[in-house]
Image (cartoon, rainbow, N blue to C red):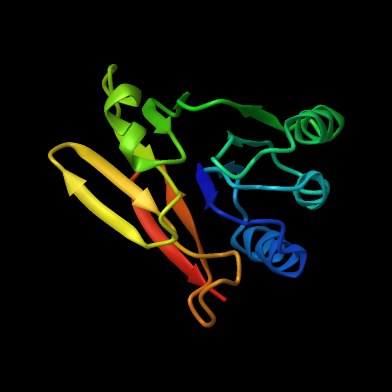
Length: 161
């Protein structure tokens, strides 16, 4: 199973359109957003994807009513962090702010996904793989990226755009 990982889109619609295209080309089976969606229009774009989309709210997701309505309308599972997932025998914890990781890791996990920092992270902490695909909101020109995680092997590919 291939998981598309995206964070901190901050309502940059042109980047979100590009992200959806990248994920479709990469043939991901699911998409996880690690927060800071900001506006409901972002969810409208992700909602066109033919795969399930889920994620967590970030600190800049202040328009909760419109985000919740758009998530419902487009079948996107969006919750307050932490989000715990179990796919293909892998345990995945999703938070926005990496400072929230200790609470999310109260239960064993194979993978921790986070955003918030706009900085790329791919590191092993013992048996835990920690990932943040990095910037994709357009704040750092030339550094936009999302990630694709192959759950079977835990191989991670960063897609820059």
